[in-house]
Image (cartoon, rainbow, N blue to C red; front, side, top):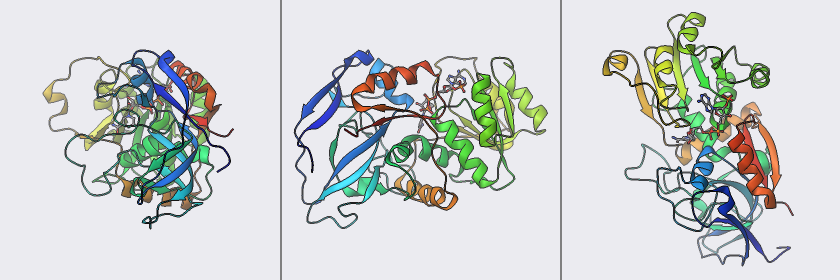
Length: 340
Ligand SMILES: NC(=O)c1ccc[n+]([C@@H]2O[C@H](COP(=O)([O-])OP(=O)(O)OC[C@H]3O[C@@H](n4cnc5c(N)ncnc54)[C@H](OP(=O)(O)O)[C@@H]3O)[C@@H](O)[C@H]2O)c1
């Protein structure tokens, strides 16, 4: 270890990004079956902004180190650790103890809200809560994966995986949606994407989205999807929530799936039972389990996919990273580097 301080950012109380405070703490001691990760990078998700601003519907313990997503190098391993060794490059799994199979009953306790997250330089952690990073990714790219990428992967796979030639609708160009476009193209899917602006549309086009709709210019974009793809899409990666859901219902093909992921909006038109009855099924997604993360990493390695990182902020500018996320003037992921 080259330094003996552990920089952290704790959220002293919810309500404002201003309540994120940088501290210098001691490096944690590890137990017999724990590893010490030198965190090299973290990434932000919409959830982190909601937590800081006091809009998160779930629990938040006061003064918690923030961010659920991080990647780094193992610099120390307890004597009982078998899963990894010193020098391994790893990322944290979002859904802590959900390793495989069906979604765990009860509430999952993600990092950054219930317990200390990854916005620190040294993290002591149980090795089962980590996955190995794909070799070709930098730490900054690897830190983008745990929440957004696994969620997008789960949305396209899950109990009824999409197959080459199927179609998907992605909404906006945040972390989850941009990963969904990347994975969809790698799977050979037809992709229709919505976005708010022409510079983001250009980027979507370069990534391979087949059809792009500006939802500000075309508020009835659900109908437009059906004009572009008669019958509708096989899956909607629904990250927006109440404001977009009626249009998403319009866009989905009979018998296909609305993957319910996000709540970027809180209110929208009321939905009638018959809007959905006999039409599509809905599946609520909670990121995904560790098996999904590892399977996804195999695909990322095989296809040599690289996460789209919009901007990397230095650790001490973490609050600026939050402000950038809040502005929605980005494409893909916002990352924080922990290099000194
Ligand atoms: N259930 C789960 O497991 C899970 C996992 C991950 C995320 N989520 C949720 O999914 C949502 C997205 O998360 P994220 O981290 O990907 O968000 P993000 O990166 O912050 O996404 C922001 C982008 O979404 C688009 N957007 C914002 N408002 C929109 C609207 N009204 N209509 C259409 N697009 C809009 C904008 O892109 P454009 O300018 O291109 O429109 C914006 O730049 C959040 O609600 C998050 O909490 C849930």
